[in-house]
Amino acid sequence: MRKLFFCLMAMMGVLTLSAQCELGSGMSVYDFTVKDEAGKDVSLSEYKGKVLLIVNTATRCGFTPQYKELEALYEKYAKDGFEILDFPCNQFGEQAPGTIQEIHQFCTANFDIQFPQFDKIDVNGANEHPLYTYLKAQKGFGGFDTNDQRGKFMDDMLRKRDADFDKKSDIKWNFTKFLISRDGRVLKRYEPTDKMSCIEADLLMELNHR
Image 1 (cartoon, rainbow, N blue to C red):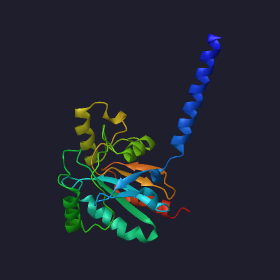
Image 2: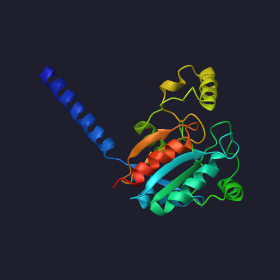
Image 3: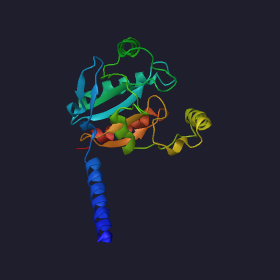
Image 4: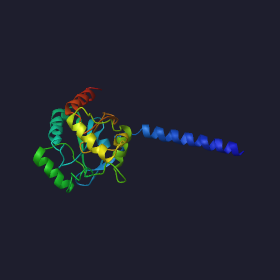
């Protein structure tokens, strides 16, 4: 009888795990709600049917000039159903100080950004936004290109802090990006050192995919 009990419990555990996996696989970015720069809730389901690039940003980072490249991409492809969703984050060297209003003013004044900018969030740790928990679970860290000077610098810097940093899926630095399909699936993750030309090539492929 006892053996039968444990067998039944084990079967229930398998069924529960299977149900959880099925639920996770059925999720998309549209299941998440974020706050805009005014603190109002925004469901990402509002972006259904568009190709998205989700990026965590900072205003005092060596990669901050990427705002100019991102805006150029946005102006080039917005008419084709492309959106950039910008989430400032102060977790990397405290390089996104100030309020979201101050950050937005800086970005519009210096880079004339037109794409949506949302409230500051954490992308790692105990207070990380659930959206980023999902994004990281879908696409883990793929490594820096150490043949690239900037990639080698980032790899060396982070490895000195944690020899096993590359085995974790956490966001490594500002301007990490996730490409999202028209139906809300996470297609690809890009590190801040990845070339914008490679991102544009993948973006074009997805924009042309129906």
